[in-house]
Image (cartoon, rainbow, N blue to C red; front, side, top):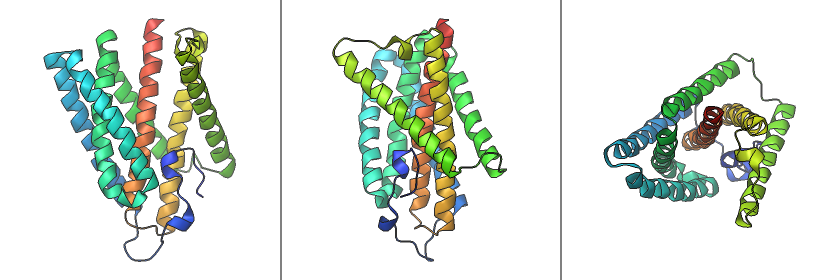
Length: 244
């Protein structure tokens, strides 16, 4: 199995039919990723426009539809990766609805936050991509193991927080705007960003091993999953800094 903390990239080698015909390319994966980003921005812009024209109440149903639809299409894409040429673009559209809605929620309370979060997310993407291509950042086995372990730890903390909240117990260091809360968010943002390096490495490795053509969509989908997570965490961090 290709080691990565991104569940979208946990594909057993035995399930992938490598071959010379119809093999994926890195440029193809980049193009597919760019196309899915455009789809996401399109649906997010539509939700954003709805927020300005009709208010936050009109956006909430679309945000829920995007959240549920994105989760379902993500699971389908992960477990049936051959369908990614169809499910990955649909995932991008659903996530756009959700991100447009969640951004509206933050923007209503913190004016100007949306632009900052978008700029930081894309800035991080291009910075890490440039560093990876230049060889400054390398996805060594130790690096992969560290990011996988850190991401797993974050997932456990979030899961524990969710379960405790069901019983009325809060974990203020996650959601608070104090030093610990901000420090926690900084760590999560860094780990989320470094997951992009694992995504780049996965696509690079799959292209060298001549993975099937549909892996261009699957690799792009994986980057989208990480970017969505990174953007949400950046929103949370910026909101905490505003509360200070």
